[in-house]
Image (cartoon, rainbow, N blue to C red):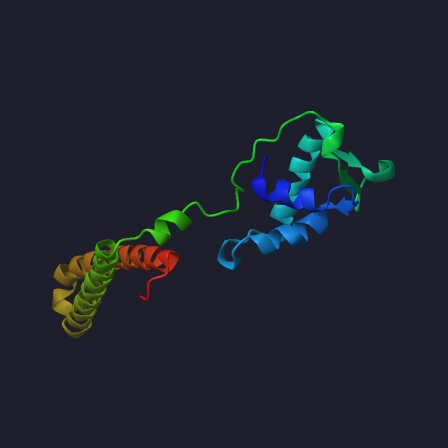
Length: 175
Protein backbone atom coordinates (compact mmCIF):
# COMPACT_ATOMS: atom_id res chain seq x y z
CA UNK A 1 0.00 0.00 0.00
CA UNK A 2 1.23 3.47 -0.91
CA UNK A 3 3.13 4.77 2.17
CA UNK A 4 2.41 8.43 1.44
CA UNK A 5 -1.30 7.72 1.18
CA UNK A 6 -1.33 5.66 4.39
CA UNK A 7 0.36 8.51 6.28
CA UNK A 8 -2.17 11.03 4.96
CA UNK A 9 -5.10 8.77 5.82
CA UNK A 10 -3.84 8.26 9.36
CA UNK A 11 -3.83 12.05 9.78
CA UNK A 12 -7.45 12.10 8.53
CA UNK A 13 -8.50 9.21 10.79
CA UNK A 14 -12.24 9.26 11.57
CA UNK A 15 -12.70 12.47 9.57
CA UNK A 16 -14.70 12.37 6.31
CA UNK A 17 -12.65 13.16 3.19
CA UNK A 18 -13.08 12.96 -0.57
CA UNK A 19 -10.66 11.62 -3.15
CA UNK A 20 -9.89 15.16 -4.30
CA UNK A 21 -9.27 16.32 -0.69
CA UNK A 22 -6.59 13.65 -0.27
CA UNK A 23 -5.25 14.30 -3.78
CA UNK A 24 -4.71 17.99 -3.01
CA UNK A 25 -2.75 17.11 0.14
CA UNK A 26 -0.90 14.21 -1.53
CA UNK A 27 0.34 16.32 -4.45
CA UNK A 28 2.14 18.60 -1.99
CA UNK A 29 4.16 15.58 -0.77
CA UNK A 30 5.68 15.07 -4.24
CA UNK A 31 8.62 17.21 -5.42
CA UNK A 32 7.45 19.76 -7.98
CA UNK A 33 9.38 18.35 -10.95
CA UNK A 34 7.99 14.86 -10.37
CA UNK A 35 4.31 15.66 -9.85
CA UNK A 36 1.89 13.64 -11.97
CA UNK A 37 -1.25 15.08 -13.52
CA UNK A 38 -4.02 15.81 -11.01
CA UNK A 39 -6.38 13.39 -12.75
CA UNK A 40 -3.80 10.59 -12.80
CA UNK A 41 -3.14 11.10 -9.09
CA UNK A 42 -6.87 11.20 -8.24
CA UNK A 43 -7.40 7.90 -10.08
CA UNK A 44 -4.47 6.29 -8.24
CA UNK A 45 -5.86 7.42 -4.89
CA UNK A 46 -9.36 6.23 -5.76
CA UNK A 47 -8.07 2.75 -6.71
CA UNK A 48 -6.15 2.56 -3.44
CA UNK A 49 -9.24 3.68 -1.49
CA UNK A 50 -11.29 0.94 -3.14
CA UNK A 51 -8.67 -1.62 -2.11
CA UNK A 52 -8.77 -0.30 1.45
CA UNK A 53 -12.56 -0.36 1.39
CA UNK A 54 -12.53 -4.05 0.40
CA UNK A 55 -10.57 -4.88 3.59
CA UNK A 56 -12.73 -2.57 5.73
CA UNK A 57 -9.99 -0.02 6.49
CA UNK A 58 -11.96 2.66 4.68
CA UNK A 59 -15.71 3.02 4.58
CA UNK A 60 -18.01 5.40 2.77
CA UNK A 61 -19.27 8.22 4.95
CA UNK A 62 -23.02 7.75 5.50
CA UNK A 63 -23.15 5.45 2.46
CA UNK A 64 -22.32 8.23 -0.01
CA UNK A 65 -21.58 7.25 -3.61
CA UNK A 66 -20.68 8.91 -6.90
CA UNK A 67 -18.80 12.11 -7.49
CA UNK A 68 -17.72 13.84 -4.29
CA UNK A 69 -18.18 10.63 -2.31
CA UNK A 70 -16.77 10.94 1.20
CA UNK A 71 -14.71 8.23 2.89
CA UNK A 72 -13.60 7.65 6.47
CA UNK A 73 -10.37 5.88 7.38
CA UNK A 74 -11.08 3.56 10.32
CA UNK A 75 -8.14 1.25 10.98
CA UNK A 76 -9.70 0.05 14.23
CA UNK A 77 -12.48 -1.73 12.26
CA UNK A 78 -10.06 -4.09 10.53
CA UNK A 79 -7.35 -6.49 11.60
CA UNK A 80 -5.47 -6.10 8.30
CA UNK A 81 -1.84 -5.00 8.58
CA UNK A 82 -0.77 -2.54 5.89
CA UNK A 83 2.58 -3.11 4.23
CA UNK A 84 3.89 0.33 3.24
CA UNK A 85 5.41 0.62 -0.23
CA UNK A 86 7.07 3.52 -1.97
CA UNK A 87 4.70 5.88 -3.76
CA UNK A 88 4.66 5.28 -7.53
CA UNK A 89 5.14 9.03 -7.95
CA UNK A 90 8.24 9.20 -5.78
CA UNK A 91 11.56 9.27 -7.61
CA UNK A 92 13.79 6.32 -6.78
CA UNK A 93 16.73 8.23 -8.26
CA UNK A 94 16.91 10.57 -5.27
CA UNK A 95 19.38 8.33 -3.37
CA UNK A 96 21.62 8.09 -6.42
CA UNK A 97 21.60 11.88 -6.74
CA UNK A 98 22.80 12.34 -3.18
CA UNK A 99 25.62 9.82 -3.54
CA UNK A 100 26.83 10.95 -6.99
CA UNK A 101 30.61 11.03 -6.77
CA UNK A 102 32.72 13.87 -8.11
CA UNK A 103 34.37 11.69 -10.77
CA UNK A 104 30.99 10.79 -12.29
CA UNK A 105 29.92 14.44 -12.25
CA UNK A 106 33.16 15.47 -13.97
CA UNK A 107 32.78 12.68 -16.55
CA UNK A 108 29.22 13.78 -17.36
CA UNK A 109 30.36 17.38 -17.85
CA UNK A 110 33.16 16.09 -20.10
CA UNK A 111 30.63 14.06 -22.13
CA UNK A 112 28.47 17.15 -22.53
CA UNK A 113 31.38 19.27 -23.72
CA UNK A 114 32.48 16.56 -26.16
CA UNK A 115 28.96 16.23 -27.62
CA UNK A 116 28.69 20.01 -28.06
CA UNK A 117 31.98 20.13 -29.98
CA UNK A 118 30.92 17.16 -32.14
CA UNK A 119 27.56 18.80 -32.86
CA UNK A 120 29.10 22.10 -33.92
CA UNK A 121 31.59 20.29 -36.19
CA UNK A 122 28.87 18.14 -37.72
CA UNK A 123 26.58 21.10 -38.35
CA UNK A 124 29.49 22.99 -39.90
CA UNK A 125 30.20 20.03 -42.16
CA UNK A 126 26.57 19.83 -43.27
CA UNK A 127 26.46 23.56 -43.93
CA UNK A 128 29.61 23.33 -46.06
CA UNK A 129 28.20 20.45 -48.11
CA UNK A 130 25.05 22.47 -48.64
CA UNK A 131 27.07 25.51 -49.72
CA UNK A 132 29.06 23.41 -52.21
CA UNK A 133 25.86 21.74 -53.39
CA UNK A 134 24.29 25.14 -54.12
CA UNK A 135 27.42 26.82 -55.55
CA UNK A 136 28.58 24.04 -57.88
CA UNK A 137 25.64 22.36 -59.58
CA UNK A 138 27.97 19.84 -61.26
CA UNK A 139 28.88 18.44 -57.79
CA UNK A 140 25.26 17.89 -56.72
CA UNK A 141 25.34 14.14 -57.32
CA UNK A 142 28.56 13.62 -55.33
CA UNK A 143 27.84 16.11 -52.54
CA UNK A 144 24.15 15.40 -51.91
CA UNK A 145 24.73 11.98 -50.30
CA UNK A 146 27.51 13.32 -48.07
CA UNK A 147 25.31 16.28 -47.09
CA UNK A 148 22.44 13.96 -46.11
CA UNK A 149 24.78 11.69 -44.12
CA UNK A 150 26.22 14.70 -42.33
CA UNK A 151 22.73 15.96 -41.42
CA UNK A 152 21.79 12.50 -40.12
CA UNK A 153 24.98 12.42 -38.02
CA UNK A 154 24.14 15.89 -36.64
CA UNK A 155 20.69 14.68 -35.62
CA UNK A 156 22.16 11.64 -33.88
CA UNK A 157 24.72 13.75 -32.02
CA UNK A 158 21.98 16.20 -31.01
CA UNK A 159 20.03 13.27 -29.52
CA UNK A 160 23.10 12.15 -27.58
CA UNK A 161 23.70 15.70 -26.35
CA UNK A 162 20.09 15.98 -25.16
CA UNK A 163 20.36 12.64 -23.35
CA UNK A 164 23.48 13.77 -21.47
CA UNK A 165 21.86 17.14 -20.69
CA UNK A 166 18.76 15.42 -19.37
CA UNK A 167 20.84 13.22 -17.03
CA UNK A 168 22.77 16.26 -15.82
CA UNK A 169 19.52 18.17 -15.24
CA UNK A 170 18.01 15.21 -13.36
CA UNK A 171 20.91 15.01 -10.93
CA UNK A 172 21.03 18.77 -10.52
CA UNK A 173 24.40 19.66 -12.04
CA UNK A 174 24.80 22.95 -13.91
CA UNK A 175 25.04 22.22 -17.65
